[in-house]
Length: 227
Image (cartoon, rainbow, N blue to C red; front, side, top):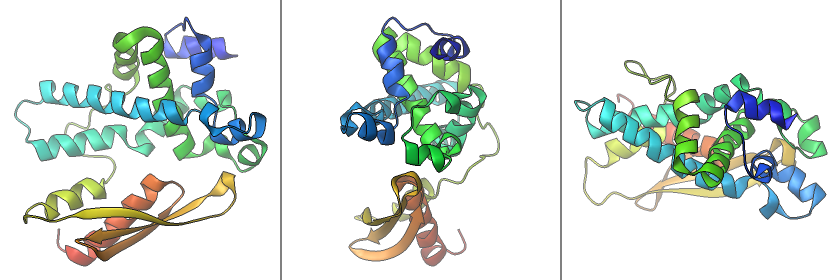
């Protein structure tokens, strides 16, 4: 079955355990090995950085007339959770995921946050197995084909808020996780956003990233209602 995924990706792994690791959600690692370090979270961390760098370089070279702020928004749109989840669905990545029983029963195979994380993990697996060329090949084939040249598809409130706040000097934004609730397969995270130590926004979501976006959105509506 994993051979099907290799064909869909268009890359054959020399070390197949890297791909298997990329498909192992934390719920599976905790149930099977009682060790979250065997999940795909470390690969996700690496893949996020590789993806961001490759997309940034592509945009820099492709759009020499676009300012930094616009390139930042374009990159954010291309690597956001919703975009990566669409890539995962196109690859039918969900059916290859290794999930714990609770996550399986809770619909984890279709959860955007899990699918997006898995895509970043697969990118990291490609990078570790075949170097930057392998990672770039994946990113070019499945992500750089949809560059938002004119209209951005998904709002990135964190970036937009940062740009507005930076119009004044010595402004400090900080996102703080203040709560978690729910079972592993249906977690809810709560984040407070502070500006120079004062709470200006609160948000909740099924992942820390979503909760931070919600908090940034809340802050923008309060601080910059006409932006």
